[in-house]
Length: 466
Ligand SMILES: O=C(O)[C@H](O)COP(=O)(O)O
Image (tube, rainbow, N blue to C red; front, side, top):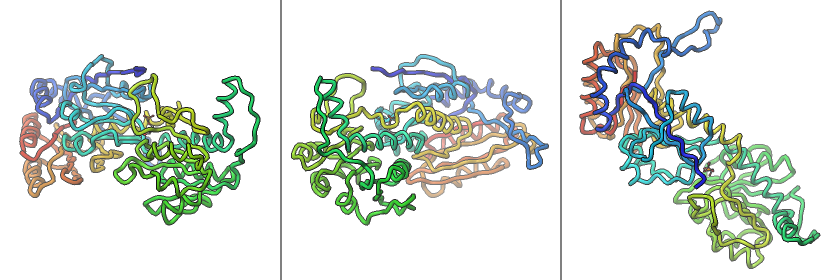
């Protein structure tokens, strides 16, 4: 394995609602209370924002932090950007080696680590999973929500890198560069123009006009290509790009077809024998989306028969867990480019992804904010300033519960014993998430709020941050 596993630990005050962490909370209760007493005067906990419109006043916001004086551990796998690692460390983590996922509170992965429902069951402390990539199909998202685990990804930070790779592949396929390169490396000089073409005025059909598809559309047009696209949603075309009525129409009209769809039940084997037959003779297929989208056996047949003019694949139905010998079954075919899932693997993309995902994870851990989460309702609650009147023990209650009638009433009966400064709640399927800023009067109140909500039968996960 070439993976660099970094294990970080975050020693912070923290209160959380899984049984394991609830015990930690009880154990460290007095330390927590001491932290609370110090809270209002501790300058380390003050964040400054730029001044108001006239620039004369600086508003100081309270900085919410997780709430247990124990270590929150973060596990980063799959060569995640060092920027993300640095950000997580600066948020308070310390490096520490850890072997097991079951002791980890925050997990960072990329596209190949499969987080199944079973694995989630074995991770009792896990609070958040950061997918440091676009795809999230590798995570059992519903199972994660049912445990109160928020999943984040980076929906667009590697779009440019993938689009650039596809542009390079369009030219490489058009000029058979892969074959000429291979021949030269094998000591053969084969100067030929047969089947080699310019890409100017050729038709590029883009399937999936999201962040990558749209980026590719702009780059392709700037090189003189005509762009068609097909998407299940109605999307505003960029430049002169034209939507087609159907996938079939796009396949029939395009010289190059590039796939940019997520893995869903609808996209599995979306391009099979039937679809490949619809493509123009000599057309080329590019897949840098998900391997399951193309039926590889059908593609092999279409290439071997000579009907198709070439293909570039960056993704495969099954991909190996680590670098080393491996076969796609397509080796040696003419004008076929095979790359090992490197579409988003540039320094720029990985750095941007690192910042984006680490920021979301830190905000979730510290404040409960779920902006950018792919499995939670997206909620945000403004953090109080130090100028706002407050009680000695203001706190933020974060709770995931089953979305059943009456549960909100029960929670608010508990919270309503205190002044609720603000509150938001939203449901997603079978589960709801509530964030509430509450003015507790004394340490016993905090204890009471946590224990009462934690023990509600509908409660899935409960945390309090301050
Ligand atoms: O989902 C993605 O962003 C791409 O498939 C890249 O995945 P990777 O970060 O695992 O290379």
